[in-house]
Length: 142
Image 1: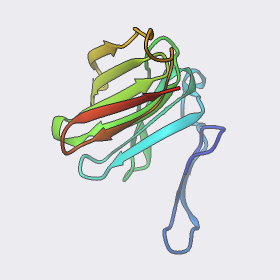
Image 2: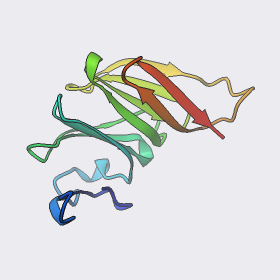
Image 3: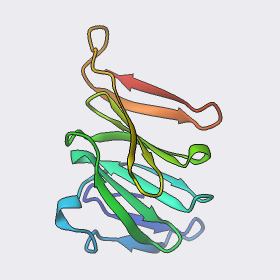
Image 4: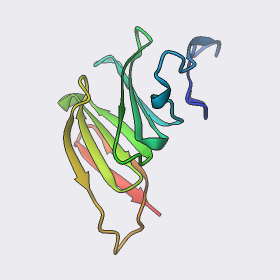
């Protein structure tokens, strides 16, 4: 569960008591951001979050620690974020019609895909869905 203040809580699935809580105090202030999207991959042992101002956080869900924090693209809010296990990549979709593909462990950018031709669509992405089986990404706009 995430909150508008950018904190993350992990709850027990039976008692719904807080098992772990991150209040952002161990992060540098410049990386504090509201979390809008989150994905977890227990096989790779990674949790990734994205939010306003294009901030992306890589977290160890087992050790409950922050691994890395990076800026996405042009301060544009992250509307969806996914861990692509087969390729060991993070796929981040930003509101300004940009898709970032990064290495899941180093967070180095592999590719930046810009879809800025909004003549047929709106200027902003509002969400996305990723099918890990086929490796296909669908985006939505308003």
